[in-house]
Length: 117
Image (tube, rainbow, N blue to C red):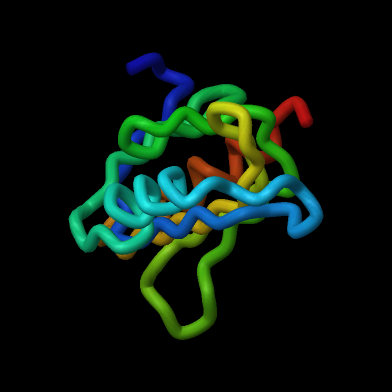
């Protein structure tokens, strides 16, 4: 892992079809995402690099509209963004409830502020 990477585990990740007017995903892709990410209750390894996000084995590129927040009254950090993997576009929500969520938030904000998009 390079020094510029941010690595952490997320309790919740949700990947869905986006934008709505883009070509629909085939059923096998949706099932693959549901089994490995969306409906999987295990922790997911997240690696944020200079211009990509790796969620388990899914490399997300072409990142856009990145938002990072700490919701009121919750001890968690959320990152929401648009991106592309394989040949499809998606909207991705990542939530970590780690004891270190504020440090993760600060690292993600620094990354976002330096992001080239």
